[in-house]
Length: 88
Ligand SMILES: [Zn+2]
Image (cartoon, rainbow, N blue to C red; front, side, top):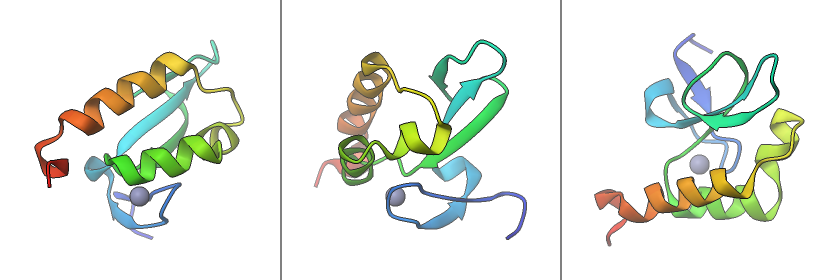
């Protein structure tokens, strides 16, 4: 796989790194946050369907080996529902 390609943890789609949300378990604090920080990362398509599946099956938590705070899911839901690409 080329270095700038990533795979969605939910639907397994492969795409460019910038097409996904990057969820990071920051080292060394262990905080789980969106798009910033260095540490273990998981990638997910910025859309409702992938977010829903990831939350329901705790794919983010399992991928990161950390618990994902409710506030982060709320942020992601807010972003997904305000993305004009999802208004169909
Ligand atoms: Zn996806």
